[in-house]
Structures are given as structure tokens and as C-alpha cells.
Image (tube, rainbow, N blue to C red; front, side):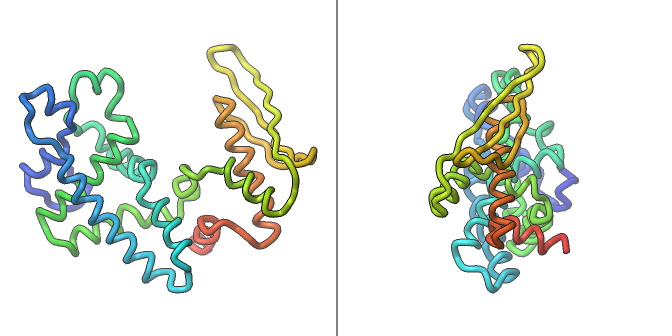
Length: 235
């Protein structure tokens, strides 16, 4: 794993890349789950310390939102794909057949195990620097930072707090059955706001909700903390 830029003991590296599905098919050899547990703690400490020092004016709630975005399964899986970690994971035959090397959960867990392995093979400062080198660029990546956000719940909360009325979605589809595309228009009390498209009704509605949240919060100066930080990072 030269892409990590950190020397990890070969045996520890092999363990970090051993998924439980592989272990079950090979006489129950040790898995990467203990390293994952350790790496999760190192990741959390490094990110929390960085955010605390970098954003001294942010309250605890906003810091928690940023941390959650940076250490989320989707964020870690995104990092793993960039490093091409998937091709190195030792998986059982069942997981290989079902595309386990591309599953967000497996990729994210393996990244945590690799962080744990880096800590054991080096020291806390080296492991911390590794985490920051991998994770902090996400602060400039809007798609990564907001990938897991529940936009539909957010717009419901905004509409209720401002007394705007009922939130509804109008969805249309186009294309052949095997490759349909969906378009959703979000309305609040009959007024159209955001429009979203996607390969499923759910994705289209989510995009429409995201666009509506951005419209309503940006115009009123109440942008979501993720949007605010991303804006600062790109200035």
C-alpha cells in the first residue's frame, strides 16, 4: 500500500486487509476488526483535534456536524477508492461475487483498519498526519461533505420552523424501463422550488430537496455549516 505514504509492518498490513469473510473461509484466521476498532479511535481524535483548532469560533454542535461528515462511511469509502484500496482487500468468495471490494461499508472499515495499522507500525503523530493528509481535502469537496446529508428531513424542518406549509414532490420519469431517469420538483404550499434528477425516484427527490435547502438558506444568510465551511475553504 505505497499510496498511503506510510510504512506499515507487512504482517500488520496483511491483517488490516483481511475481511472477516476471508477469515471464515480460511480456518478462522484473525480479521481486521480489532485494527478497525483502533483506527476508528485514532481517526476520531485526529479529526476532532484538527477541527477544534482550525475553527475556534464554531460551537460544539457545528463541530460535531463537520466531524460526522469527515469520518462518515461514504467519506472513508471515497478515500479508499481514490487510493485503490479495494483491489488489495482479502475477501471471501461470496463477497467477491457480490462486488464486496466496491461496497462502501467494507471500504470504510478497511480504511479504519489501515489507520490502526499505521498507528501500531509507527506512532501517534505519524498516524495523525496520515489521517489529516487523507481527510482534510474533503473540506473542499462539496459532494463528499454533503453526500450523506438527509436533505429531505432538513427541508421539512426548515418549512415547519418558518411556517411555510406542506412540502410535496412531483415526480416524472422518462426513458426505457431498464434505464429510466426521474425528475422531481419540490413545492411548498404550491410554490415550486428545487428540481432534481436521478436514476431513481428517491435520488431525484433528494436532489430537489438539496437544491431547495440551498435556495432557502443562502438567500436568508442561514447557510448550513457544511456550506459555510466549504465556502471559506474555496475563497
